[in-house]
Length: 302
Image (spheres, rainbow, N blue to C red):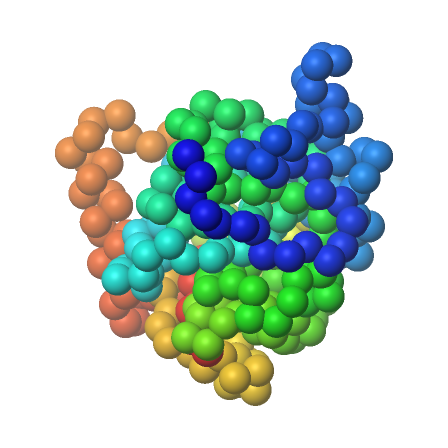
């Protein structure tokens, strides 16, 4: 089906697949995805997530990730209500959970990630979708740090940057770069670690040294064992105002389930699962609960 849509112009190298556009993945036809992105990847400037991909993918079906993805999807749907066929850029799309959901909802999505393993998972999931969904999602191998150079101004109606800023030493340059890509009225969606709640997780585990450290620093080690950084809502609000994408709304993510064990699975009972998500959803938008959520979902509007 020809929708008449063309992806935003890509000014950098590294395109490895454009589903629905006749592209072929490197490695297809010779044993799978083992060569994805190795020959034509864009250079990575952050690299801080290196080594964490395997553990991340192993936990995709766990309770904590399930709650994160479900809540963010609900919150995005709320912010996108009444907006149809939006041009969406998903920076650090990983396994493609949100990108796929948005493509299924009728939006045209460009997903970018520098990790070939995660992109291979996303491509495998996309291959199972019907043709109309495959035609609305393209996956690119690259580091989103310089997307402001690779895409022209006002190329997208919505830009997602979820779970990326925590691996950068300073979020402001990335936010400014992404703001440039937004068309008038566009939305910028950021998912970050909440510095105002940074002491809660180590304290719950009885790690009092780390809890005390969290009062003095925005640096921490996450459950993947990676060095990361947290952001305050007040600081992000100032940055968004400075790049002319003022804060529109914000949510908490994972108020009650953040301390669940890594191997905890979502409840099998459908009613119990629905109640769990409803409790998290209520807390995500209610003070003072959302103020101490593990993650903040911050949405700015241009």
